[in-house]
Image 1 (tube, rainbow, N blue to C red):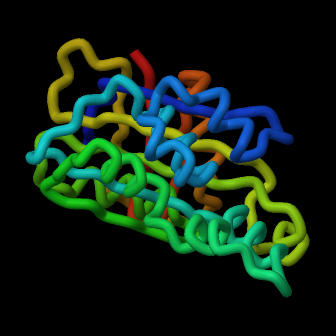
Image 2: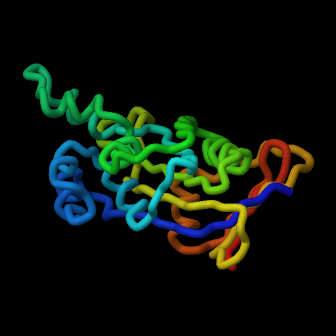
Length: 218
């Protein structure tokens, strides 16, 4: 069995209709003013989830998203035929967690950006469990899509999450564990399901490729 212990959980799941502008207003005290106006909705949500977490140059971070800055891209495309320079700048801005790290001028030992669909959660957690750094942050999230949602290219809900994992069981709020065993083609939970498990401190378990996964709470 391979495991790491949970020592911080942050999840930001706003109301279904929240816009990036509304998120900037709601979260403005958590970010520098100069960075705030350039951040995407996903960057704001991930930054909110990382609020209070002090990262160091020896830490590693695994970042997971299926659609990333979907809404930022939608807004830019909707500005045609008179393309908005500001919306273009936002649509090509660094990814959500990078916006946070750049704003903090925060070096890391390693950053693992992952994208995917069906087994993204397994890929992200396995990367974290195999990472040699003593402390690993798993972060991720999505932006809520509008017209791209109908094309299967956007998420239905915006959310951001961050969980700090270490090898120290003392004082841990829970653990994430993988036990090798017979493989399974069973469904892997979605990124949103993982975020809900973290937010509600709800146990989560499933059989995946190569073994059994568990998110457990103390």
